[in-house]
Amino acid sequence: MKYWVQLSILFVLMITAIPGQAQKTNAEKYKPPRLFTKWGNGIDSAKMTVDEAKKLIPLSLAISDAAGNKYEISSYNFVYKRVAFIEDEKTGKPIPSSTMVSSLFRNSPLPPIWIKQVSEELKPGEELFFFDVYVKDGKGRILTAPNLRILVR
Image (cartoon, rainbow, N blue to C red; front, side):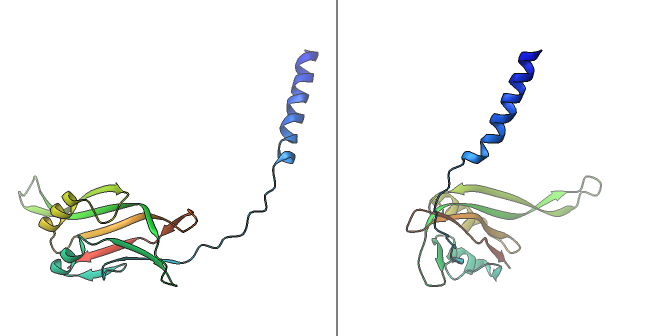
């Protein structure tokens, strides 16, 4: 019993001593720049026609700051929200619905298969959405860029 009491006291002392041994660094304060996400002439929440949106699909996503500095894309997610219809089981009539196709990409523009598929299927009422966009600055730091949503009318 005496052994367990001594062991418990030693354990408590070790746990409380750990935070006091933390290393202090003189890391410089870094304020990340405000970034802007652009896809051709498309900016966030832009509404455009099917033809205008089809012209954007093969273009690269561009990330820049207010000073015009360009940033290398590390990764991003792209969602194509399609208009779809499901059949009402009771009436047999079609009901508007939507489906989503999404993937993680590490290069811009989109891969050729995605460009072909989205270009062929794009219709009014659909959305093209870039999110979780990560970029690297000149020093290799990872920054988060704003999302970009294009609404097709």
